[in-house]
Each structure stands twice: as C-alpha cells, then as structure tokens.
Image (cartoon, rainbow, N blue to C red; front, side, top):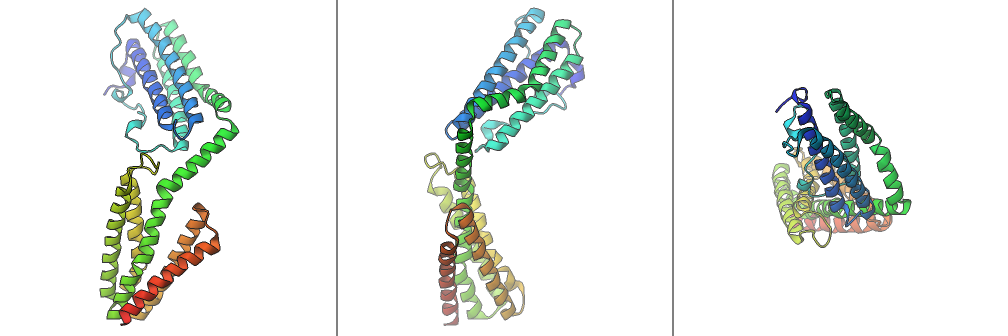
Amino acid sequence: MRNFSELSERDVLALAISNEEEDGRIYLDFAERLRADYPASAAVFTAMAAEESEHRRRLFDTYRERFGEHIPLIRRQDIRGAISPKPIWQLPELNLDEVRQQAEMMEAEAARFYRLAASRTTDASVRRLLIDLAEEEARHEHTAETLAATKLTDNARAEEDETARRLFVLRYVQPGLVGLMDGSVSTLAPLFAAAFATHNPWETFLVGIAASVGAGISMGMAEGLSDNGSLTGRGTPWMRGTICGVMTTLGGIFHTLPYLIPDFWTATILAFVVVALELAAITWIRWKYMDSPPFAAALQVGLGGALVFASGVLIGSG
C-alpha cells in the first residue's frame, strides 16, 4: 500500500476515476437489490449513479488531455488510510436505512477526498476540477434529498417503510418467535416429567439441556430447509435457521437453569416463574409484531403452555 501523499497528479486523477466508477456501480447495486421491494428508493440510487458517471466522464476528459489514453488501475484499497465501501454483493440482505446511511458516508468521503486531492495538485485546471467536484459532492446530500423528494413521495416512503417492517417480521421476528414458542413450550413436558420422576435437580437439568439443544438443532434445520426464500421473500435459509435454532435453544434453557439450584422445590417454583415470564414475552411479541389481540394471544399461549406443563407433571408423577 502507498500513502496518499506519495501519489502524483496522474495517480490522483486515476484514483478519482476509479473511485467514481466504483461508487456508481455501488449505487446501481443498491438500486438493483432494492428494486423489487423498494422501487422508489431504487430510482433515487439509479439517478445518483448517473451523477457519478458524469463525474467520471469529466475526470477522464481532463486525464486524457494531460496524460493520454492509458489509465493505470489505482484503487482506494491500495491507498493507506482510505475507506473502502462494504462489498454489497456479499450481503445477503439490505436494510433500507443502512443503505441510505452508507450512501451519505460515501458522499462525505468523496468530498473529503477531492479537497485533499486538490491540495496535492499544481496544475490550475486539475485543481479547479477537483475543487468543483468536492463542492458537488458536498452538495450531493442536498441533491439526494431533492431526488428523494421528487421520486420518493410521502406515499412511496410510507409504503417502503411498511414493506421494511413486513420483511423484518417475516425474516427475523417470525422464525425467532416460532423458535421461542417451541423451545419454551415443547421442552416443558420432558423437563417437568424428569423433575417429578426423579426429584433430582441435576438430572432434571441434564434432561432440560438435552431437550433444549436437541429441539434447537431440529427446529433450526426444519426452518432452514423449509424454503430457500426466493419465492416467499423470507430471507436466506441459513439466517432463518440460525435465528429459529438459537431462539428454540434459549427458550428451553431459560426454565432449565433454575435446576442448578440443589433444592428441588425451590428450583421447581423458580422454573415455573420463568415459564410464566417466557409465555408473557411470547404474548407481547405476538401482539407487537403479529397483530394478535392481547387477550387472545395470552389465552392461546397460556393454554398451550398449561397443557404441556400438566402432561409433563402427570407423566413424571406416574
């Protein structure tokens, strides 16, 4: 890697051309990845990519006048201290707010680069161009706001915000809730069956851990293999499977941990309290994100948990 201070005017222009090309392609990547779910924002990034292309053309014209046709490949990754954008193609999903924030950071970094580059040049025409580009990049945020006001109307923004919420629920909340419900409810029967059959906290703890881990692996694989997300929009299989598996395991472990207490009845009462808190949390999540009426959600979750708990106690006591 080289320091920016070691670059010649030719190198600076070549780096600027490379930066503009990369930024433009990133904006087009944003647009392509967002087009299906956020068409208005995709139009904004397509327009921003067009502006980057115009900047690149002006830089190339200046470079050709000064140094000819050949442009050496100099990238920001080769310059010490330069900030490289995240590789968009490696990201499985894009968060709309994060995309907009990254675009703002790219614009601010571009303006800083051109100001620094202008201070390193001695040719008046090159310096004038770099200063102009620095001012344009500094105004780019205002340009983005203008484009957003034109293409991203209030109705379009509201629709995109609702789409973002729906995708968040579909890709994260739903698999997490399924896992939490399964881990919190399905492990009650083996846990309390072992507890009332043995009256031994440690053995009960081992049964609970085994049931929780086994349920987590099973639910994670089931969720991950259910579909690849291409048609349903539910996100990548590994992400859904991981979320579901982890939440299933946690749902079972929470009410298993009290059995680390040596006294059986103390551990059992505390485990029952933890179960009640878990069911309350599930009810709140269903009300908050799944639009379930609070009373109906509490009744459904509580009834299911009570039935599984009672079956475990009866089997263990028998």
